[in-house]
Image 1 (cartoon, helix red, strand yellow):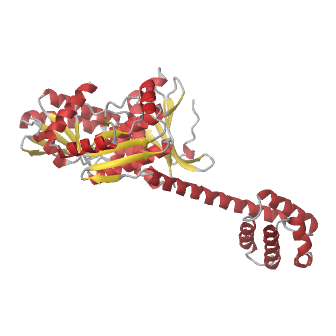
Image 2 (cartoon, chains in turn yellow, orange, green):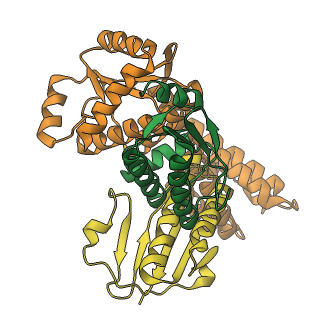
Image 3 (cartoon, chains in turn purple, brown, blue):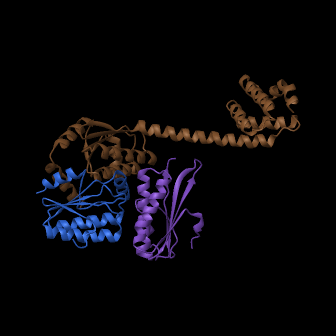
Length: 123
Length: 245
Length: 119
C-alpha cells in the first residue's frame, strides 16, 4: 500500500459522491491559480483532477486525492503533485490507461493506483 | 585584528592574488572588512563586500584566500565569512536562474511571432527546434491570439524547423486540433523534402489540416476561404468529419 | 419548463444553449435529456452550445456532448459548439479528445451563420 501522509499535502479531497468530482475540480483550479500557474496549466490541472476524481468515483466508489505544491529539479521549478488513492480493482493494462503519454503512472496493482502528473509553471 | 590587517595589507594581498584586478578586489575587500568589522550590521555589509569580491575571483580562490587569512590572522572569523559566502552564492544562483527564465521567455517570444497578416488570417512562422516547453508556450500564445482576433484561418509555416520527429509532429497535431476547436481553420506550409520523408516514414499524419506547397499558395487559399461563405466551409467540414469516421 | 438544468433560448428553428453553470456528471446527463426533449417538442433544427463560460471540459463532459450531438443528428438536428476557451481547447487537444458530430464555430454569430447554411 502506498504511504501518503495527509499532513504533507496542501489539499486533501475525499471523493465518495458524484458532486465531489466538480468540487475537486474547482479546488484544484483555485489552488493552481493561487500558485501562479498559467491559464493553460490551470485548466490542465483542473481537468486532470476531474478525471482522477471520476475514476475514483466510478471504479472504486471512494478514495482520496492529495494535492501539494512542490519544487522540482535544481532550478526549483514549481510543480503541483497530484496523487489519487483508492482501493479500486487495479489496472489490467496500464499502457491503455495512460493517456497520450502526458501522465506518468505509478501502479500499485490490486490496491488502487496513483496518477502523478507534474505540470510546470514559471514563477 | 583591524590593525593587523591594515599593517600587513600589501603583503597579504600579494599572497592572495597575482592579477592586478584581483589584487585590487582583495584589497578593497580587506579594507572594507576591517573598517566595518565592529559595525552592528556587519553581516549584511559582509554580504555586499563578498559579492563585490566574487565578481573578480572564483569560488575556489575565495576558499583558499579565506583559509590563508584564517591561519595568518588571529581571530579571523572564517566560519562567518564562509556562511555569508554561501548566502551570496545562493543569491547569485537565484539571479542567474531568473535571468535564464527571462531569456527563455524573450527567446520564445522572438522565435514565434504571430502575425496578423490579413483580415481574419494569422501567420505563424516557426523557426528553430521545438522542445516541449517551447511548443507549449507557442500553442498557448497562438490559441490566445486566435481567440482574441477571431481569426478564421491560421497559417503555420514550418520552413524554419530543421526536424519534425514524432514528438514535434505530435505537438503540431495537438496545436492544430486545438485551433480547430476554436472554430478556425489551419493551413500548414513549408514542409521540406527531407521532412516529408521522415514524416511519412514515422507515420505522422497531417491529414486533419490543409497543406499548401508554399506561403504564396497558402495565403491565396487562406484569403479564398476567409472570404468564402459558410456553406462551402461546411461542405469541407462535413467531408472532413466523414473522413474521420 | 420542468427539469431544465440550463435555460435555453429558441431563435428561429435553433436552440441556443448558453452553459453558465459548473458541469458535473449528473448535470451534463440531465442536459442531454433536456436537449433531446426540446429538439422534439420545439421542432429544433440546430443546437448551438455556447461554452464560453465553461472553464473545464473533461473527457466525460466532452463525451456526453458528442453523444448528444450524435443523438440530435439522428433526429435531424445539427449541433454547433462555440466559444471554447483557448486553454480548454488546448487541454482537449492534448488529451486527444475528439468532438464527434459537433461543428465548431468561433462565436455565436458564426454558429448561427453556419446553421443557416446547413440546409
